[in-house]
Length: 166
Image (cartoon, rainbow, N blue to C red; front, top):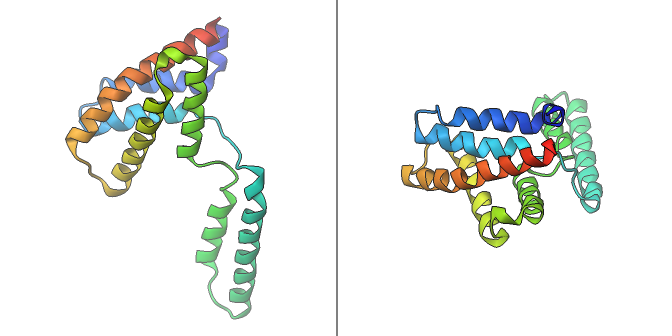
């Protein structure tokens, strides 16, 4: 049991999943289920081949900031963009989700067929993002997403729990 307590992400995911049943709306249930998967994701660094491109982008921003400062212009917007660029050391959540779920299916084939599950989970994550940015989505799409996630999430959590407790 001590192994489970040391797995903070798994404990959080289980906690979130247990609370999902108490959500009242379809929207909240959908977001909660996608968040369960997101809470399990590792922080993956960006591939080595894109690091030089990121460094070039940072240099361009630094040069623009320096030029704006020398003209007495505000650099607040550039500073915010530089801060966001600094956070790009990790892969996107969508990319991380794809590789994480892929590796989980490799480890636990009984979770389902990779070529069916991966595209669907990516689509559901994109729906969640759109929902959070736009504030609405068709209820039928959310219900379908809940149906899919209700099959995948508890199976995944069960497999990870068993793995950690053994």
